[in-house]
Length: 305
Image (cartoon, rainbow, N blue to C red; front, side):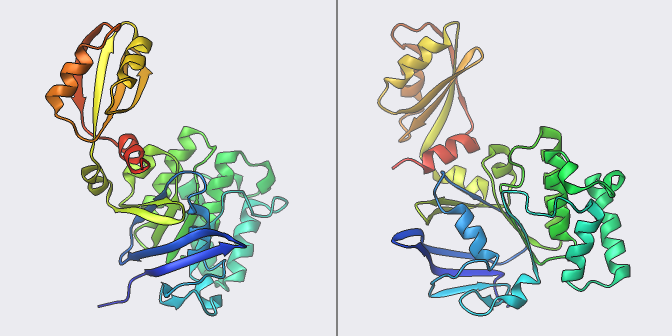
């Protein structure tokens, strides 16, 4: 059997007295899209930077693409594409020049560079802007250029930190399409705060306080949480939400349009929940319906003590 693409045992990273990563155990065996999710300060960016070989770490075992992160990672970096949160390409260089600069760093032959550049510019819709400086691009176009730049050397591992944050919905969909295509030839590891993106990942890693609290496919995580989801309809949704929050097992109740989304924790009997919600004091509830557990309720349940 081939070695795992990523194998971490007791991976730690300290900044002074603070432990940003407090013992990460993680194994990834095949190319897929792996989403790293969790609250702010959970250690997501630190983990991604560690996987990209950008940090000195401590671990019992820490290999990425067969390279030990505790040793010389120079060769590893030649096989990794990394996209940080902030745009880091040369703003005074054109789209074409940025790609060419990266290709030269990786010593790509000219014919191979032209082939890959042409494909990436077509895929990202940046071909008409090849001669525009990066600093003049829109936010979404900058992100697409950053991802194209990370892909130009055909990496075996693509690491992206919040790649769609702050871009418009059209650019976000285009970026996600690029990542799905990249999964064919590379392991894609990304952090995201978007629920639909988390649900679309092949596998999720939920971090909290520098530790892996849960890992698995989105379906596995949904099945593992002891939560349920309900929708309560009525005219005064704010009153319904207030009354629902008073129930001891309700984790969250949020008014949305003409209904209230009710998150239930601890898996009480559905019949009891339906009865209690239909009879909320001071709130005229017309209809209560159970819903499948979604990614929002899953992550909320994982964040509970």
